[in-house]
Structures are given as C-alpha cells and as structure tokens.
Image 1 (cartoon, rainbow, N blue to C red):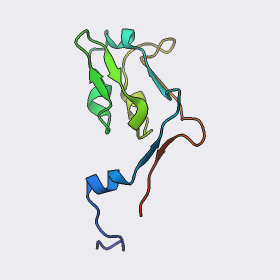
Image 2: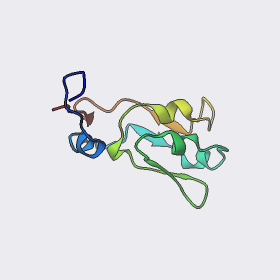
Image 3: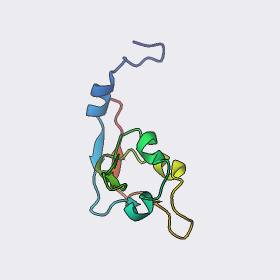
Length: 103
C-alpha cells in the first residue's frame, strides 16, 4: 500500500477497470483533408491513448471508441483554421463516454 491508503495498482489492471460507453456518433471529428496539410501531426504524439494514426496518404485515422476525453488532441492541434478546424471536439452525450473506476 502507498501512503494514501490505496493499494498500488498496475497500469494494465487499472485499465481493465475502465469502461467505455461508446456513443453511436463520435464526440471527436477529424477532418483528414485538413490533416494532410498539418506539418506536425501533434495529435499523433500527444494522445495518451494512442488513438491517432497517420495514414500513408498524409491523413489521420482516428478511433474514438477508447478515448479518455481529455481534450489533449484538440488543444495541441495546429491544423486548420477557426472556420475549418482539423479536430472538432465536444463532450459525449450524457451516459456515454469513459467511466473510470477505482475499486
């Protein structure tokens, strides 16, 4: 046990406790046409769940089903314009999304 009173739990065990309630519609939409012009592809490197994958044609493949909803991709994205962003992010509908469990 650590000093906080909780038993130490490994990453794999902790992730086994996470539940993803997947909505029919994604809460993140990636405009792959805009991504093709992105010089950094920062979302690929910043996403803690590794959900962004560059494609051979310069676009991005994104899988929202196991998203932590942290918003990192949206914050680091430097592609697009305010009128046409590369990533559009919103919270999932109520009752959908990631559920973290500690016990």
